[in-house]
View 1 (spheres, helix red, strand yellow):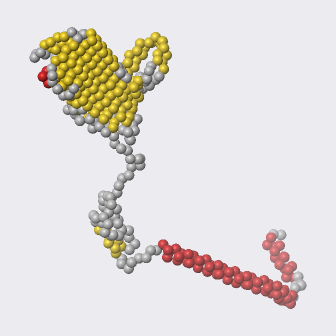
View 2 (view 1 turned 60 degrees about the vertical axis):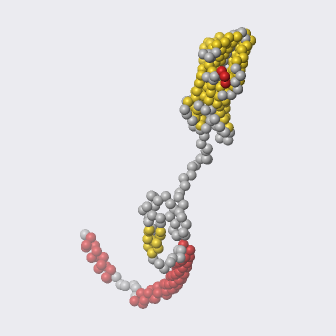
View 3 (view 1 turned 30 degrees about the vertical axis):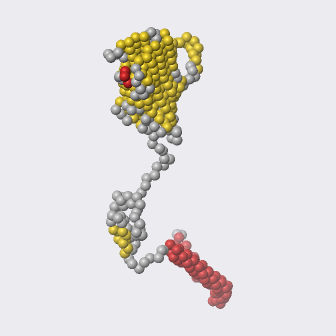
Length: 388
């Protein structure tokens, strides 16, 4: 028997079976279902109404609060506006029109270094000023050193250089100097005048040692300057060196000044030669141990050395002058006439003579010539004196 025949047989059996459920039973089932479900439908409706009311209230509060806050913010941020829709903005270089909802743009702002006022108050615009980040620094005389820069004090206008690796080289300029003073313990000096307005200073120091030795006091040389008004004072100071062992030492200390022709010069050296050329003024040349050489000097001249010779060429005296050495010769060519001078020549152990075209005279140790207003004294303890 197949599936279709089984289904037909089942339907016929159901049709033949007597129904056990009546119409009344079905009606009672429907009524009972209606009585049970009615309360559920009513409560559902009540809940839906309450939810709708609460949602409406919350939405109203949120929208109202947002509108209230946005209204206050707009009232605070919005400035009062004039009824006019166009406002003219005047500038020194151009005129710009500003309309509603439009920002004026001045194309010439980057080229005009003045602040553009929004309102014309009748005040001239001020130029921008560039400010440096660092503090103001007073410009001093140009100083150029080939090795070390000086430590400078702006208030006293002073500075100094120190040797490094037993050497020091300085080349610098000073302007506005009327008087030059040098003080040093060991230094060969040169002062040379020329047609210039500033003072050039060049210094060279070197210390060379060879052999097997121990040494103390490194950094042994200092060059310093101090300027007060128009007076420039330069100092050279060396520390005492101590070498233990077998060594060969070679030390060089040389200072050169290139100055204007008209300048007062005062040189004081403990050890070293002094050379002065082409200078007019008050000239003082002093060294404890060294020779003094002069050429084309004019003015009041004092030349003193304890141990060394004094030599002069084309010396013109304008005031009382003195040439003195304890151990050495004096040989000076005077450009003055003998009638303008009063010569006082003396040597403790040596000869004195005058060798000029207009006068030739010799003496053993003392010679006085002339009655002029310019008094010239030449003295030596051990050596000869010659006036040309």
